[in-house]
Length: 481
Image 1: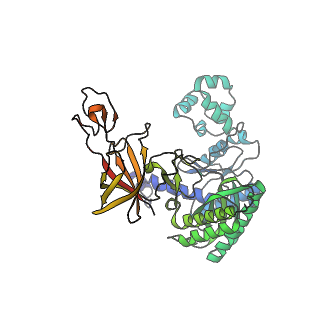
Image 2: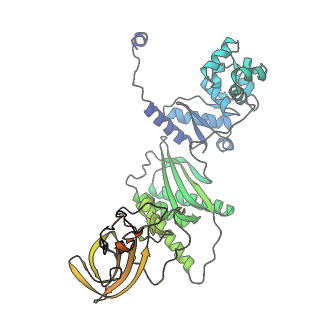
Image 3: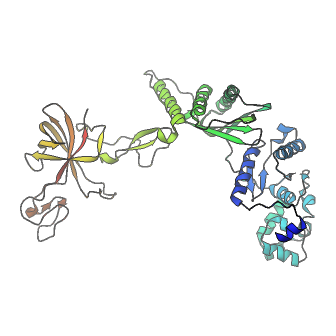
């Protein structure tokens, strides 16, 4: 640095910040989405744009290249742009500082004078080629491929073919290609909220026609706002089911804009507004049923979409029934707008005894109670809960639920539960269970199940003493309305 400052006294010096450089390149890549949706990063300082089918929208390749460079220069970004038939040829020419447009089929002549280092191969291969007298891509192209492959590997031949334009490979865009895109460009940037909302409405109408022609509906939509200064803001909304209703999409984006803590700042205005379908699914017209259930489902889906947009997708949940007899695992919360069903869920309701209905609300964890039964393994006659004694007038059960053998045991170690639905004399109904079983240890039984008779140690809650084992505990798991 001292030598550099001695040569250039007014040299500007700043610290190298790779993270900031990468973020700046990402910002430029976001802005380049205005030219084509297929943009890929190329190293730490380059971008590759696939403009196939896009150049005619900007007056052809020369005009598009000139407008792109002028746009970047207006934002103090210096760039070298090359239009070629393959990404490798364009990359090699741009990194060599040779900007311009390569005519179709002229890639081999354009890159012939470039050094072999522009093939982006390992440094050892470049050194070996230089020692062999092959210093340019033209020298390498004139050699027979078989000796080159035998000495330097097939990677060199592949890079050479792509750079010469003999083999093409598609780029991997940094953002997935949308299923459908509608956009509006403005000669003068717009900044009013009314104009932005009206533009989104027109784009939603255009997307609805595209999706209807394909027999599809959108599940995820993204609105992109390109500011005149190069900044890009994106807003995404998702729907609970495939939709191509433009009016519903307008309402969702109105809710999304109103719910933003940081409103969309137009700055000097937006010169491009784009609405894209990120994910689409088949959608066929549905006939309204005679009982009106289809209309109710559509209204519920619309409500879910509005709540998810306003509160966040992760905060709007629904219960999904799982195929298990364990009441603590009988349901799971999933996002209401998520169409995917968890693997543990079953599309068919589990088979349970219809006479033993379960309460909708359960205590977590179950609350301990003191219960007295007429026989050890029978229903309770009375129980005390929260210092109040309840006399049982009616009882139904038991519904015996054992742990699922393919899962780990419960944290409390209880192997089996007997559930009872009881009603006290005042008409209140409770859902009680007894954790563990009463058995006679002297006859070969214990609180956790059968065991051999003679001389074994205690298991679970069993006792080696004669007579009844230690009493299992009672719990209140839920209340019936």
